[in-house]
Length: 157
Image (cartoon, rainbow, N blue to C red; front, side, top):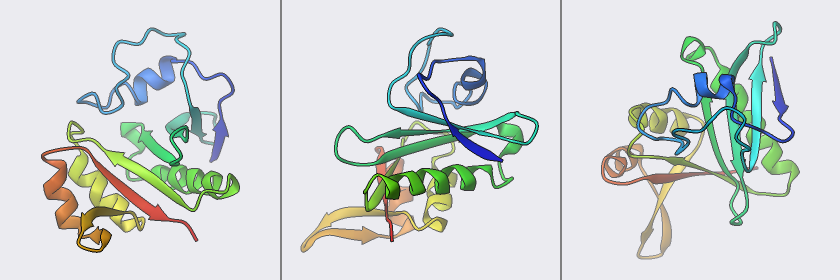
């Protein structure tokens, strides 16, 4: 499998079938027409037969290295998501970032599953406490995402 950067990414049938099928407006890409120019960086994971298994997305315009990903429903649980997220984290390191941010939206029907998976990948929710930003438990993140979008952060070493 290979993670490949898309030059001049556009909304295409592959993205429609993978990213567009995620319910709840998770990616805020509803009603895009094929051929629409996309912003930020898009990466696609392909297998040895050039099948697209999933996509990774990067936005680092606001000083954070924000990432998101989607894996085709037929390949979820196959390790494809891990390949994408590890690839995006490597790109963050190459660009000099020391953390990545993944936002889990409350509208994502798989938000609880995503939080559990991201915690396994060493992402953590932080919340303002008495001494500044404090790490919070997975249970805290699960409770919060039912009310609002939540950022999970991973410190890169």
